[in-house]
Picture (cartoon, rainbow over the protein chains, first blue to last red):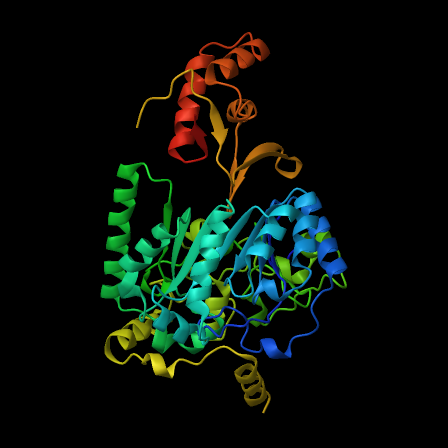
Length: 383
Length: 92
């Protein structure tokens, strides 16, 4: 089947496979990127089903594999999955909160062939970290596990999702990461999907907060470069302070393949919110899914683009922006991403910025991500 | 930083992996959450980096493999300097 409304040439291979092994997680971060209705999703793929996904994706050309979730450590077969993936030639990345990790498991994963561990933190101090994570001893555990990861010689990425309540401590965050000997520090300002979108009024930083954080990050980059320090700082600005949309995922279904816990295949981990039918690995081969399925071809190429994108000379750069953001903000998955100043809906972004200045919500108003709340959301939506 | 010399022994840093990818029809360098496609000359040089061989030995091996090519020593030194700046390799 050719793409609906697309005249593009054959897409390249999926180079990146993200395996969302589970939506289960011991933490309750209010900006979780899992779907709001995660509690209602179907049974997780079995060990054998996951390994078959890895095999097929590797055959298509995927080289990077991320084990993610939820918290991937809750899967008791994680070592086996790592071993199988490494045996197929993947570069294997474990993306974890650190909760559920132990020195023994870190060693077991090394034996299985794990290449890298990314540990996420919620803040640079215990009180705020544990408040955001909704878990009493998370911070102490994360510190211990980050140290253990480095002690066992792994390369380590430390990831901080930043927002209005922790971004002013950016200097302390960077210092903590350096103390923990991170090889890469990701300072990713919250993007507003899933639970983060639900909590946007309590998370979006002000422009002044963001600019200060970026300035301090740049100062640290210069300082580290001058020292010949190998640590790299990655700063992700939120779309809400841009005037042009991002080239989401490098283009719809062009590089990235996400498999949700129940086997649903997605071009990005947020895409299942879209009014698009996505295929499941239990029913179709990955080759069919990547090249031929309706869902993966839905926004490939540029024939589907609306105005003002269609006649815009920047369409080859940003492909009309993010489909999920367009859908969340306008109710129309084909609309121009409202982040773009040329969008008729850009006022929604300006309103959100104004709210961050004038009427933000406090920390105590954040809705934590957990199964109980997810059930309530499902119920209220079905009524 | 000191200058790269022929006696230095380059080694990929832990977490970096060099491998052939049939789907991309090229060698790549893989690292945490990232991948660089390598052109033929970069791949020929990195393919010689084993943590054992000095830069001089790598140059000699490449001269033997590509007897027609000029400027191999300069190319190797230049590439390994860039690789070090990007923290792909360390020199011993």
